[in-house]
Every structure is written in structure tokens, then in C-alpha cells.
Length: 499
Image (cartoon, rainbow, N blue to C red; front, top):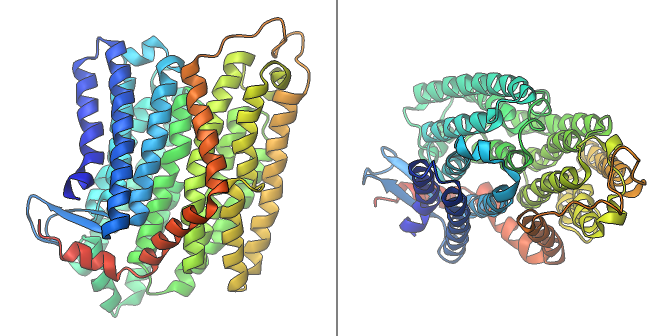
């Protein structure tokens, strides 16, 4: 199990180094990127299987006993997230082989892709707050360079907003880490869980909790800290947008769920009540922003925000069922959202633009693309029997069980508006006839590379299968939620790890 814990770190790190050594050989870099992402997915599956069979796994790097060393730990939730990172990384690596131009590949696209996956997996598997800060910085550096790679004007403008807000978030994060160390004398999350529960100064703990809520709120793009996201996520190549939309904000959500189930549970009525309110506002502002857009990727960018609201809703409700709904919904959304960005890239490839007004006729000329769009789009809207329906159903059920009817009403209303946005894309890009100036006619049908179609098809099938096999997927999510709500096993695994 110790080997499986470090493989999701070693694989992308080794691949990034190899790609840098072979920076003049683009073909070799492409193959290294795809193979490494495939190995990352395989190691994630192995880790999830090991955690499922043998329980939470923890290891101390360098042989230092907890809480003094660098802790690596995987429970069911973090193992699920590593698998999802592997799925999206593998899909994007294949898609990028033809969608990323030679110039960007020469400037280090594949090393940066692997460094980003390194940071993502490190954040999922770390067991102490300072290491989490470090992994967030690794992600920030890689994502910023990927955002500006190519040097286009729109990219630079979006990147300035992106990096400015995220640097502010990092400063607040570091301040929170310093304060919590000053209060407790430790940064190991398992040790902090025990120390914070015994502290008498609850007001100080709640104040520090608000710093972490702001930090991870910026990373996750919750209300009112989201405005950097729609200004930047539509500017890079679509493969990068898919990677960002699928993974980066979810790392923020993961960190928020981790600390507000393991550490900051002293004043649940205030902290989690506030999170529930913010979840509702996040849903509404995101979906209204999407409804006002007329660009394929801008609509999807705003929908990232609204869907984050559902994930955070489960944390705010703070029951086993609600957290299981959040875990299930995160898994569904990572796959569906990344896939929709990849679909938008194919639509631009064959239609020439991301603007819906300049698209049309895709249903008639590319019926297979219409099907591949509808599966994740209807899942995002919560249409049964797709995965999005079951995620929303569990969250709404959890809200009704504890009589939180306000957030339930918001969740239902936002689901209808999400369907409206997906219908707008369908009507404009797929259903309406192609115009004489833009769109796709039967006479001119650009050939779509198989390396772009195959990842989209596989992710669409996964969305369908996750809905059809909702019971086993939900049972796994329920196990993850049970571990989050009862962190005793997590604490025991970490504090008992001496290897």
C-alpha cells in the first residue's frame, strides 16, 4: 500500500522530467504524456481497490513518526479523487495529441500537464496543511503557465485575473496555516483533529476556519469569490479548459470538505450554516451567468460555478447522506464537465467558432457529435437515468430529511435553469440550420481526428454507466462519507503510521 500511495506522485513527476529532457522531440513527449496518464489512472484504481479492501492507508515519508514527518494518506474519498484525476488526465493527454499545436508543445505543454497532475494528486493525498499549501502552489504555477502558453492577448488578460486572485488566496492560506500552528503547535491534520476538538477557545478556531473558508472558497470559485473563473477558463486551448474545468476547482472543494469535516467542527451551526447559504448563492449566480452567455465555453465556465454550489451544499447540510451526495456529484461533474469542454473543442473544429451565433447544422452533419453532447449535457441538467440526476436526487433527499427546504428549492430551480442553458447550446449549435457564412453544411465536413473523438466517447459512456450503475457508485460514495463524518479511523491510520 505504501507504494501505491506514492505512485500518483512519482509517475507524473518522472514523466515531467522525461518530457523536459526530450523537449526537442514532440512525438516522444506526446507518447510519454499519454503513457504516464494511463499509468496514473492504473495506480489510482489500484489505490482505491487497496483502500476499499484494507482500509485507510497512511505512510510517513523519511521515517519520521506522525505528527512530525510528511504524511501521505488515502481514505476512500481521496482515492476516488485520484482515480478521477487519472481519468481526466488520460482523456486530455490523448485529446491534446492533435488539438494542441506544435508551438505550444515545443514550449513545454506536456511537462506542464504532468506537473499539474502532480500537484492535483499531491493535494488529494497529503496529510498535513503545509504540504497542502505546497501542492496548491505547484498547481498554481503549472496552471498559470498553461493559461498563458501561446501568448495570445485574451489568454494574458484572463491569466492576470486568475493569478492575482489565486495569489491572494495563497497569502490568506499561509496566514491561516501560521495562525493554526500558533494555536496548536502542529499542522498534521489527524493530530489537529484531536487538538482542535479539545480547545476551549472556540472563537479563535472559528476565526481561523473563516480564513480557510475564504482560501478554499477562492480556489473552488464559490460565491462571491468566483469572478476570476469565467474571465479566464475560456481563454486557453480547449484541452486546457477541460483540465481546469474538470479538476482545479474540485481540488478546492476537496480541501474544503476535508478541513470542514476533519478540523473545523466546533461550531457547526455557524460554519456549516454559512456554507449552506454560500452554496445557494453559488448555484444561483453561476446558472444566471450561464443563461446570459452566447459562447459555448463561457456557458460551460459559468456552469462550473453553479455546479460547485451543489458540491458545497452537501458539506453545509453535514449529514452522511448529504456528504455521500457531494462525493457522488463531484465524480459525476468532473467527468461530465471536462467532457463538455472537449465537445466544445470538436464543435469549434468542425464549425469554426465557439460563438453559438456562428455555429449551426451540427446535428445534421455530425449526428454522432450531437449524441456525445447530449449525454453529458443532460446529465449536467439532472435528467434520469444519467449520473447527474442521482447526484442531485441524493442531495435534495438529504436536504428534505433535515428540513432545509430553502436550499432544496434553490437546487431544484437551478436544475431547471441548467436545462435551459443546455437547450440553448443544442438549439443554436446543433439544431438550427447552418448559415451561409458560418456553421457546417453537408458539402463541407472537416475530418475530426480519432484522438479527439475517442476520449469524448469514453467519457460519455462513463457518464451513462455511472447513472445505470448508480447503486454501487453511491455505496462507494456512502463509504467515503461515513469516513468523513467519523474521522476516528483516519486519525488512527495516520497517528499509527510509523513506516
